[in-house]
Image (cartoon, rainbow, N blue to C red; front, top):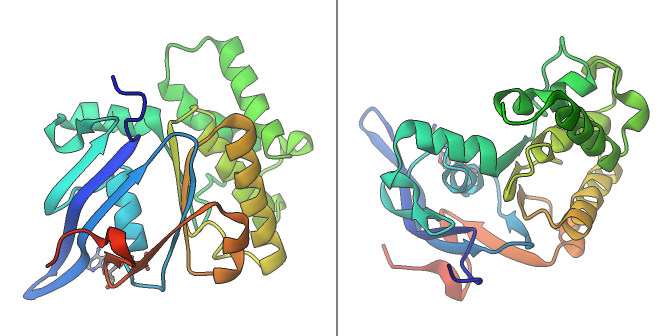
Amino acid sequence: MAMSQALIRLEDVHRIYRLGETEVPALRGITLELHAGEFTALVGPSGSGKSTLLNLAGCIDEPDRGRVLVEGVDAATLADDARSRLRNRKIGFIFQSFNLVPVLDVYENVELPLLVHSHLSKVERRERVHRAIDDVGLHDYARHPPDKLSGGQRQRVAIARALVTQPILVLADEPTANLDSETARRIVDLMVELNQKRNVTFLFSTHDEKLMARVGRHVRIRDGRLDGAASGAAA
Ligand code: ADP
């Protein structure tokens, strides 16, 4: 067990969407490693392949060529149930449109992913949920339904929900796209703070260059390829 092993390694991954007769090459040979404790921004214009890359890193989708290694294990070699266990236990997701359950309050939304973690006692579960809600600054809002919250607060709930399972990696797909620029800045600040305070590893995508100043590592993507030396194999 090497200490320096990547949490996630994408190895020359290709992804081609097929729409009838048409082939859309979304990723064209990407090699990328994410290590524990890193905060990485994936920056690129709309349509450049950011969501596709996050879906592969999160084992939601599989590459047509190349490999996705999670802590050294090739995700393609896992059976479906092992892969979904890995996804549920090790990876947290944050989406552009928050994806909260409207009939559940803040507490219940954050608790949801823990209901499949049957090894936790009720007390442990409650502590985890409260801690996640406190961590995103929503202590006073636990019993509020999502529709009584602002966009920024809703995204904080989604962040708490992603963190509550204590994943090794949080993937955030354009988490600030539906927020005004000041709120977007605060959400990035919160993710940076959680990365530093709780050592959560983040990969978040954005097309907003203004948000980059706060982020340590930038990876640029265009037309399904990474910019610069790390762009991997030729087509
Ligand atoms: P981004 O997240 O940077 O906007 P995407 O990964 O969503 O980029 O898309 C990359 C390319 O793949 C785009 O050309 C997009 O139109 C195409 N694409 C994405 N998802 C699908 C899909 N399900 N079927 C067909 N084409 C897709």
